[in-house]
Image (cartoon, rainbow, N blue to C red; front, side):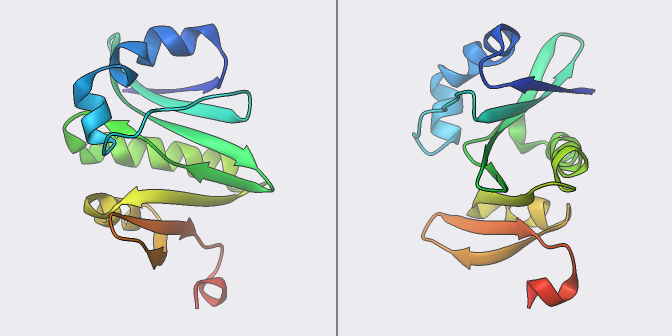
Length: 136
């Protein structure tokens, strides 16, 4: 499996994810919210032998990298982990990393260094804390 990093308006992005972001399955997976992109986004895409396994768009703004509206086929934990590890590796030095995480995905985010900051009804705001004091 490879993790591909693309800017939000890169033409290759559409070849890799368009068939998913417009599918009923992926939109349902995202609790019926549409996927968005712009020049403010960086996309991390998991691919294996030409097949897109999942993606996480990350919005870069105000010193933060915000993960939201992601998709991982079959909720595959290895794909989640590969994507999250690559995001942390690529962005954590310069940016605070946050995620709007579906409740059912909290455990896989926690296993990859995220902690819940607070809960909503269907989501949790999660963060990667740089040290234990920051978490408290």
